[in-house]
Image 1 (cartoon, rainbow, N blue to C red):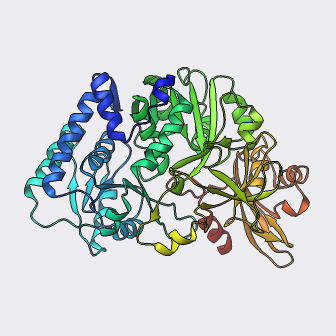
Image 2 (image 1 turned 90 degrees about the horizontal axis):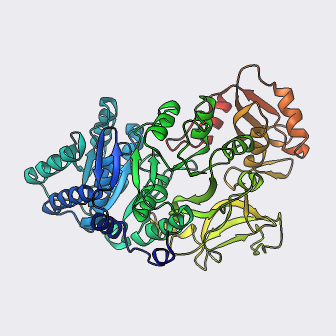
Length: 523
């Protein structure tokens, strides 16, 4: 990205789309299977869909929901919502009826678009969810491709008879997108993210990646900020190509990276670990990849070392839904140790602070002193939908977002994540953060993935139970206990090790600790 371009921050994703459609009309904007859409065609498609929605009365106060995987229909629906001033939300087709009915009932979308690529079982779950809510949105079962989507939405607008459902709450908070939190610590909350939030995050990431016209793999769920803010918005800023993959598969993902000459790929560590286990995370498949990123969890150091041998730029980041994505990011040329042990430097220097449990600020020269990460700035969300109490408790009296994540400053000015306050457990009076133990376990060459939870202990109050994914016979529980004792204080070493366990995952790919703990308690 040139110095001049880096100084011209776009106002919205639509500004980016129009600019690229004018300057590079034939450049590929999106690829899904055999369908290839140029920037010129994407803009025309967005305008057609937006025109149909305008006939329906969609605009400020209307919520438009997309039910499906990442794909061209996702991208068009998102941008068309922006065009008419509506609020867009993504519905994950992996959700069951109970999960869908909760977010649909909370957001009250006026329109639900069911992608052509959604299977029959998912459609049944959607229908069941809608039958259980009071406000009934209009449903459009889309037919394949960009043209099919335009025709179906146009038909829906011409046949409409009933009035639209609107939300004063949505109108008041100026939300561009509504992203529901994962629900790992309770019922999901709808974070209202504005156009300014999206562009602030995308602009910093675009400058870090600096891959104008590059080709990006997009395979994260559409209801997750990693897909919307950290990928789609960034690609639109850079004028790149979004290559969509509807459902992650280790081998198919690697083959797509190779066939489409992907230059930038961002996933959660679990996906990269699965690709590595399948034998496809190597130079042969990734020869065109210039930037490889991860977030949401730590990457094992052994895998980072391997990736460094064939990918020029590796980086990880830390962020959350309420910060519209990225808060910290590792710098170009970061060492293996920095990539494994830290989540990088603040994206905006004065927009992050650590607050100790005693309410005192943790100074940056107080290396290893722990505190809660708090952030402020143009990327921070405004509110949760229909939940003023949760909104209020998410901010300090002086306006900083409380993330619930505990970290410490490192001597190089970067942050090291310790864990989440809600994941912390106490053993014999000591505060224990699972992420520290998981990182030690994952540094063992035989361990693919690990999750540690606090469970009741008659002597210590609570103790750690470690669930470890590894090849059968590759390591024993005693060996892992010894490995931990050599690297951790004794009180941090798990009392229980469960090997070769399939770890339950949330739809976004993170470990579902609530389910894991419930399962453990039933044993």
